[in-house]
Length: 519
Image (cartoon, rainbow, N blue to C red; front, side, top):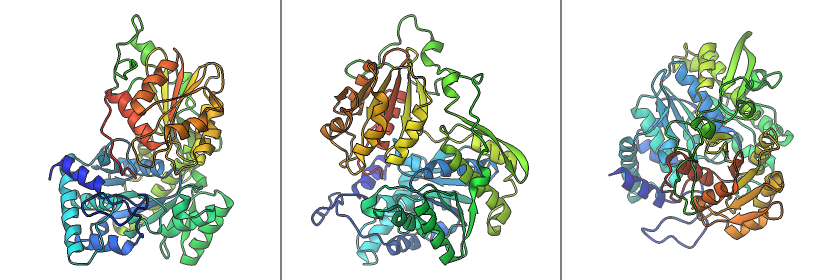
């Protein structure tokens, strides 16, 4: 099977968040909401040879910060010389991004198209056989197949340890069939309430479903309701809990203003501008490359974490490209997990002698996790800030970061959201920061059946700032760039789908094909 055919077949499966409808039509994309059942996932993986039991696992659940924590920990493990795997969701542009591997001391890379197609073919054929034999009631969902592909690839490629991000919840998430050496719980807030519960306590109990009897939990103090629910679950299971607060800095010390300015990333389109049709335009005549594509170091100081902590009583210099003070919590969780793995010797299942403080520092420094408070320079002294703030907690984090930006720079908000998110609340948090005479907002739907309409988005934002609506992300970016004057800041946020499209447009200059089913 070709890669293109594999991806097309994958998206046709539907996923756990699909809206309810009548009985599915044979051969049509699955749209009926299903009952989650880990027994189905175990049956599928057993038929595949239980690949999830061939490597040490670290399982991460939470509402915000899961991906950042996972990416940081995986980078640390790779720097320590371990054959490392990373599974995250959703993706920004291509499904391959969810499944990454690195050789010892290497760089995490997405699964190749060839390996993706081959693993999908094996999972799909196995699932069809199980359905025919009556061992599965229906074909697996998008996320179940993706998770199975990841497990299979990690086993076949000889991964020693895998860092796995739960997709939704925890207790019934497809990733939860592993036996984690460590469980990590990041910050928990209200999100996916129709699936996980309507209170923080209910959601926390679902997330705590990744804990194991007599296991180990890495977490941080957070909302009192979440603390209580997590604590009750941990006590009931005899879990040993480790507080990662010891790896938080005593005070915030961001990058100094004399640090290097951010240069354009590899492959960045030259002096990005767009005309009304959204096509790339030449850079402004007379504008130097440095002027067009450099973000002043004074702005960058709020968008890099540099501070000193103690690891086993010795100083460690933390230098993370993950922006925002909130990332200090996620970095602390990753460091705590690395130290605990070193202390545990991973139950003798993995060689972790290389998990030195130097490796921890190197892994943190080399972490790559795009689309989260990510700055990209464009022309005329302007830059774009990308952030996937898709719930109120994420919006507050973005608002805090925006407060550190210069007040004299014009701002343009580029906003989209899924209709099952807290659209009005997110808009109320962010849009008032774009209410000055020189500020604007552009809204657009995203290519997903769960997307809010342009009318819904416009209504949520226009009462705070002058707002325009566009038909899609490409048109919205073109108009937002037109509205952003020299020296201005374009902030794109509200949906991971939007950030994936905008980032791809900016970096490649071409709109990648985005399909339904991106988690």
